[in-house]
Image (cartoon, rainbow, N blue to C red):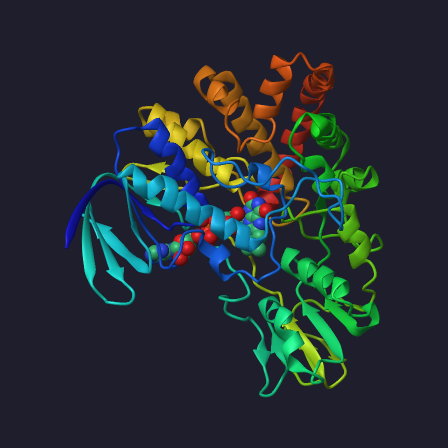
Length: 481
Ligand SMILES: Cc1cc2nc3c(=O)[nH]c(=O)nc-3n(C[C@H](O)[C@H](O)[C@H](O)COP(=O)(O)OP(=O)(O)OC[C@H]3O[C@@H](n4cnc5c(N)ncnc54)[C@H](O)[C@@H]3O)c2cc1C
């Protein structure tokens, strides 16, 4: 079969969906074809563990055209007082609705689920149905859009980097809710492998499910700085907190001699959190957490810090230069998937490359906002040079010391957008931009809490030179990895 399209989009995960959603509005004449190996839209959310949730408020995740979550804060649990975090099931349902109620009825989107993109040559892409093996040729009138840049990796689908001896009890987080079916044959001990957000979710889940903290061991190769979710909330009621956080980051950049020191300052004032205050964090992957979750996780005191695990066997785990003995019936829980590949040393390159667009973060970590802006740039500006100048990809940095590089790129992109009237007007209505829509609403209502913005302008003047200084050192360290 042969079909024709304007844009062939590889992947139907959150990033591709946010791109397509905006392109449909901004370029009312184009036709788009989406191809994805998963059976449903939403990418990795299809493979997530059942208790996974967004770590940021739903209010600014997803796509621009369709609201997500509600505007009532949680009244119980560790996220109490903050806006809700959609569960994985809710994220999947949201994207399915988007496809079925907006994309497909528009008549302008063709969707090939359970299909693999095999490559393109001479303007023709090849798609293969995974189940039938049938191939489709796609004549691409304009561009191929690569929505697979993030290479998201989750426990259910990743390749383990450690060996597992036969008969070792091992699970992924998604298996845990099924433990109720095992009658008396339950693990006496649980071992969380990994230090990222999945491991934190698993720790919270085990504690809330009633496992005693003494019956949990947690292998944390590196300690992480975590964003305090209080300072990422949408809407006027949290606006002063959000701006204070931005001001604090800029002032810390002016004051600090290194990225590490900048985080120390932000940690001292509560903008950044960490589970164990006695250990220096060497990781920062933008994981966002509430103070309530941190309090819970601090109950787990059996923490193993020998680096990454190399091998596990019943009652034992081996590291490069250490071994740990555990109860024979300990259940290992694999939380070692990398999610977003922050530690990878890949050259990013520009987004707009002739007949190809590679969707990348323009405001890290807001990946769906970034993709939506990329679509806006594609539809509203003429040449690649201008489009790339309006959207420099933010590097995916791995450590507190290299974070200033991503932070500076965010500020530079934001600066370019605020000075372009077309983009600025669009952002003030874009629900994926947590502050733009809030500021527009507050201005319309003459909200006096906007006064906090005065401090922000001052902080920019003081902070940007410091941030540039830190970013130079960060760039060297980031490139040397
Ligand atoms: C547990 C978890 C929680 C997260 N929470 C947040 C959050 O709260 N906020 C936030 O902003 N980000 C969050 N993230 C980051 C997350 O990566 C993004 O939000 C987003 O879902 C990534 O979407 P994506 O489209 O880039 O990738 P994916 O979801 O991986 O989608 C890519 C798709 O491309 C398809 N594909 C790849 N190659 C091919 C091919 N050759 N042919 C056909 N199809 C192909 C894959 O099948 C996949 O469906 C979270 C990540 C994880 C793992």
